[in-house]
Length: 233
Image (cartoon, rainbow, N blue to C red; front, side):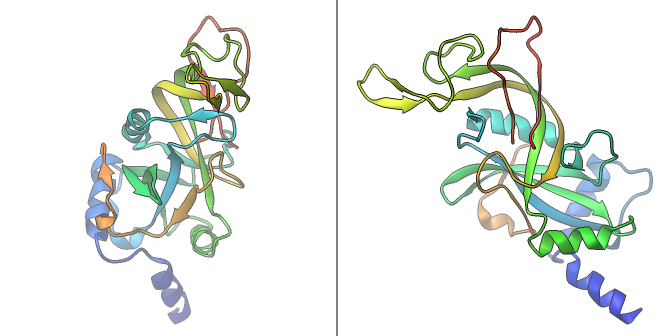
């Protein structure tokens, strides 16, 4: 019993701010049975940034802020496996700057009494389960070169094109009008470099709560419906 207690204490979140986060969980997620500090593990994930991802997509700050509003109460899965039940849930989101890059960061929790809960915490804190991704819906992938829907224009993501200024730049697309976050997932590799799960950090890091990825759009004819289901790995 003593050993188990020590392990759980070592894996628990820092005491600073924990009571406030538990209050957020109870208010925003509204579990049938209110949770206490000893009932949950809480960690933070850096989910997506304003950099071009491996599929040629990119978020601007406004779309990241919109995702921050939509991700609260979204489930946490493993590997975007929608056939299995969630392992956790997002309850807080904010826009932060990290190493000069704008990031969407979310807080998520899972129950200490759940099967495999401590193993999950050990693998996260030990750096084995490290990267994350999101599945979301949006309306238009806007080409960075011509401003049109990149599925129907002539430009190909990552191919370099001449600009009016005479310089060359690689094409990418902007995610426009994100309207739903389906889930976030622990994955083997995120679509944008630097996704990760961390312990909680002080609010003084400059986070701005907004409530307060990785996605693929195939080059194809414009569908009749403007909604696309977007998955990461």
